[in-house]
Image (cartoon, rainbow, N blue to C red; front, side):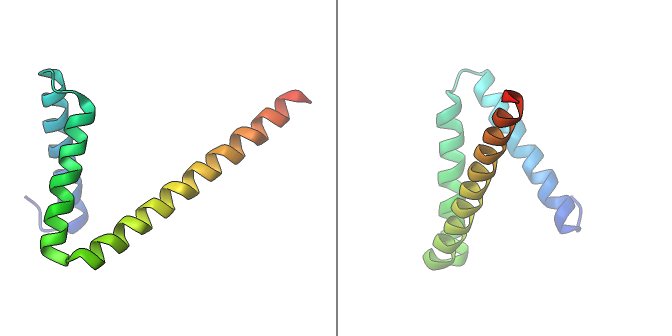
Length: 85
């Protein structure tokens, strides 16, 4: 594995995706696969960084997702308005 952090993160992400896809192909429901990955990842994060830091990270992720949803909704409304003219 590489010492470059971004490259290492990309390699890890690729490996987790391969594991998830393999499990889904074997018949494990996708929601169970991703929920378990999330649960294990969060437990590890709490173990390494504590509950407060993990909670803060989750809040930041939730805010990012909310912003993305808001932007997507605005873009859909704008596109809808443009097609009516």
